[in-house]
Image 1 (tube, rainbow, N blue to C red):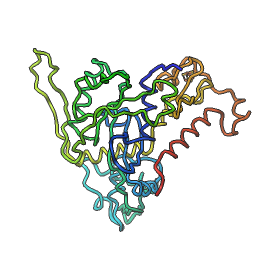
Image 2: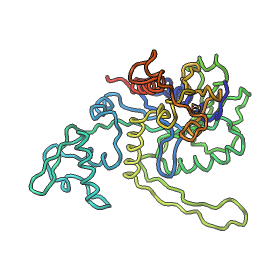
Image 3: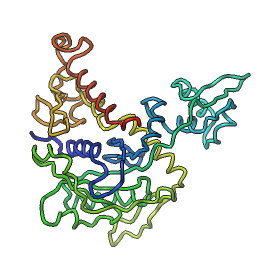
Length: 357
Ligand code: SF4
């Protein structure tokens, strides 16, 4: 099999590994339940893989709010909703934006049965249905760079230095492909010592089948101070001898970091890592999922490659819809292979959510 973009399939393999095996063998944390997602983060920074370590019992409480994630506005309402009826402006913390946006969020929360509302005179009152649980324990960010040569390491260094300075995630790792050399080349690159290094051997089918043993810790990361103010680096000198500009940065307070972390965890909870089906075309007659060891990877029979989300979209010149006959011959009446693939990935996402205690 070939990969049109080795980074995409590498990322899916790392996600599957994390779902089954996090934390790495030699990083001891007992009974860690995790949610895994990909391509999540903030407006400024998106990580390849996110591992959310969760409290199982608290997650079961979170599930009672449904499987959809909550954005920051909904979280503000749900987390601060009082046990007894109160005017929403008395109950919720003062926003640094107009109250009408809070009112909209209250209505959205009520529409999703996250809180109860009623109108008294001209006032909207709310009360909670149940307390929002403290389900997120740690957030781990993994940046994938299968081929970590010197120039890739230079580019990556800037990004992970920002991550360490801001300390939004509890840990930052770089995942790379194992080379089998006596000293892995990744260890020789000039990367921040706070960042962990993982090497994966996904090289052949046999190794992939033995997925459980493939993640090797080359370097352990330092736990970052997520409850302390973070530093967002806005600009810094290029390193050129003629560049006399000063570094620019701003502080991010712990409260803002806490809200951002929870919003990221909520997105991870809703999306998981199999959400690539939403941006690809499983309704194309050439779209397949092929098993590669213990992971299912998208496969395009038209190009005989593992296609990427950017190739497998509405602009693909080779797109051909499933013939109508596929929808009635041998497939459930409600859809052909494309729908079946979508349902399969959806079921797997559900199964991947840690069990209720
Ligand atoms: S949309 Fe294009 S890339 Fe995707 S499966 Fe169809 S032919 Fe392949």
